[in-house]
Length: 194
Image 1 (spheres, rainbow, N blue to C red):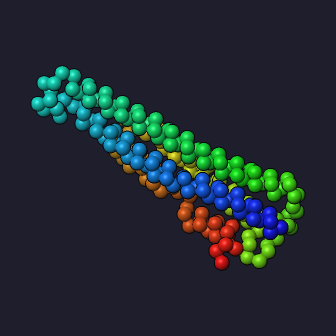
Image 2: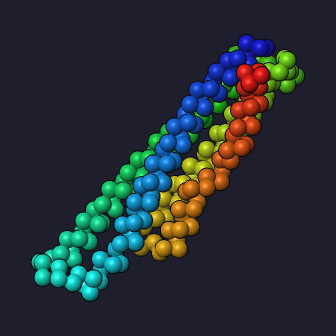
Image 3: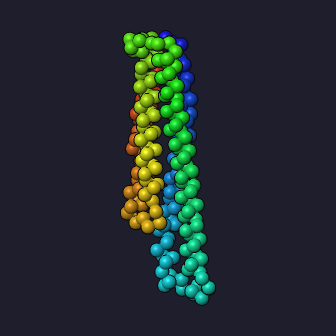
């Protein structure tokens, strides 16, 4: 029984490495989002002839500047979609870890429900490990769905108030509460903490 718990913990440890990458990618996504919103905020100013002053004498300057801003904005949108795809890769990896762990526990050794709840010393039960991993998968899946929706709502026509609300959703990560994640790891790795 203890050997099975160790194997499950090992798989959760690998999933935890994927989750560490999540924070880095989320930070990149937020940086790209902020850059895109700066460009979006700049567009109305560039669209008004009165803001060009002496530069009005330069041929095609308003069109060239607007074209360049739209080009930069499109590159930022592409980059955000690529970052989202990497976040989705983490979600898929977590789901695979859960599937593989479930298969290892239920398929290979055919443990009974009582054995799944059996606790040896301060080690977690197999059920606690699986429940924790399932919860972590669900958190990241839900957060990915939210981030995808937020990014898809951002357009060059977004208002300042919309941008502020979308930014807050990206920053908060409401589906991945750090204290809950830590408590899951505290349960799964209880024997290593002591």
